[in-house]
Length: 508
Image (cartoon, rainbow, N blue to C red; front, top):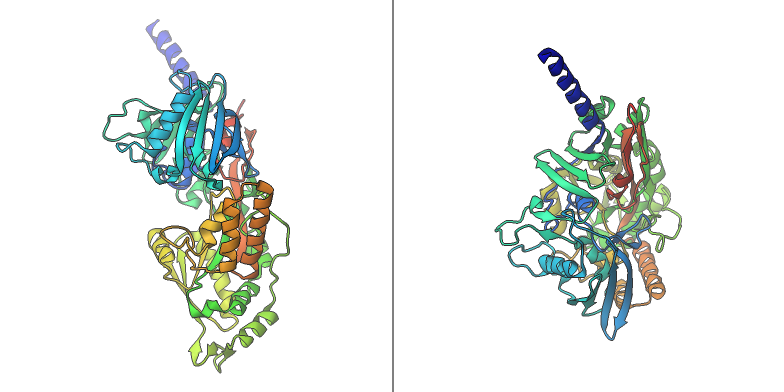
């Protein structure tokens, strides 16, 4: 009888383990989240996992438009010079400990993020423009800003509604924080993060860090990974498309990949040279043969995902003859060795690139076409931190950069306004155009959204016409999963919200 009982117990354990395995979805990410406490989350993986665990009042949908997450409705009004947002919380919204989410909890969360000197949130400076946060009734809260700004609403997507188990602790860790999202953070290991759904009919999500793309591809094929949301080269994506049991989903993202040129250097002060660089890039060939159609060619900073700002236009053509003419007009002639020279000085550029494999491959291609026309391109491959330090300090001639995670037109001011050079902003190329500054300043204080978008479209035209940066493409959001996964959708922001509907039907 003991033997029979042991067999029954063993079979029971096997069934439980089988069910547990079936209820888990293993998801590959390419980098370790830097901090899963929402007060300090700045990288994409940390923020995206936090979107599942911690709800904000608002966030952005696939069309880059503000939508309610924890709120039922919200209004945006001007009260004199002050901008006022009023949020009505969703009914029956609760924290994961079962307690109701009240307007007072939203105000307390604001104080954690913006004022608490024990926590010292990374985002304290983000909320300096808030004049007051007022509880109107148990489910209604009001944010009053000192002045109007587009960033006022978008920055609230970073403010998660939370409770802290013990706010007096010297260090507040991710597991000390109670959220009101659809998932609960259960375990954090060096290369694995587990979040469990509050709705027990949904699968557990296990995020596994897999840095090497070849290893990741094998894990997908061997069914060790169910879904990859990690970065992967176009070549590897193309190969995986041909493998049985694998499906690839993609859509244009809101990210913007560009060739950054240092406007403080004499070479690039001449618009003819800037335009020539653009004309020498065979974008359509690169898209088809190198990128394997995993991107959309760019006509400006905003991809088709930005429904309110994107306007179709013609991509810069690959026109070698015109590029040669422009360079000649700018005084650059080929010497006997076929190298471009001007006043005895060779056309030589210092090109910085991070040690990201996909970035290096893109630079290799672009370098070939520029050197073919007599330029000397010195490529320096650097570790990410070193590369970013050089980029921010303006120690480069050319870079291939990428802006990710932005959700609105205020990004134009951050990247191109002359007053937003580092460390204040993202104008790392030193671009300076008073006409553009004027238009961006007008947009920044315009409260009418229709008029404001007119200004931003004018700004985009100035940026493109002046070759402030050289447009390349918008990389696609690419998720790769096992064919037995269902209800997979994608979001142009790259967020993990689509994981909420994901189902695993393998073997069912």
